[in-house]
Image 1: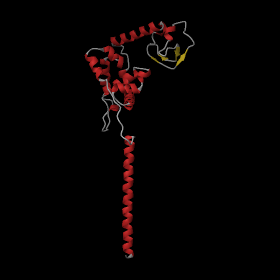
Image 2 (image 1 turned 135 degrees about the vertical axis):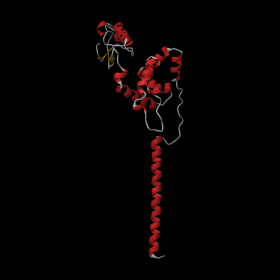
Image 3 (image 1 turned 45 degrees about the horizontal axis):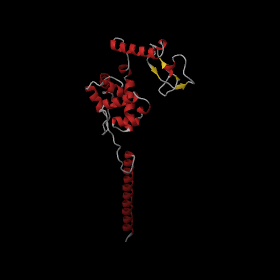
Image 4 (image 1 turned 90 degrees about the vertical axis):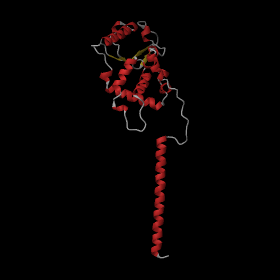
Length: 226
């Protein structure tokens, strides 16, 4: 074999090897993308879900507001009004092949969680109630919170021109006064803070300091007197 033929053979062998290495590298990259996308290598069985969201509509049709309130803590008309204000917010749209849940479902998940505390407010419990994954509960919670904060003045307020809003505010003030004292009547909008347990029941308005953890405690709060 001449020197020229030997050089040509070596060149072809080198191209073949480079092609194999490139093909092998592309295969590794594709497998890496697949692992990153799926986050697991072995097939797994999906956890069973039994959604109960359909009960909300049934309770509305049967005018069973007590059960509706127990889950979402708002009236059906308030729930529908919030959906109308939120559904056009850009945070609820994307270009993914996996579309988001309807705004009504995301809002129901959000209201269910913020309306409960303790074990009833865990993402696991809400996920089982809504029939979705824990990650979906977290995403819905964040998205609805962002949208509500950006639309705060449109969705969270008392309209002084609306008699129903004034009646609701007065009713809340009467409730605060009945559970505490007249001086605290105007502080019906509060933000709970960290509780500090007391050694014993206070002698003045003692039951007002009894909390859900079966302790007498003081709580740091931000309160606006209106």
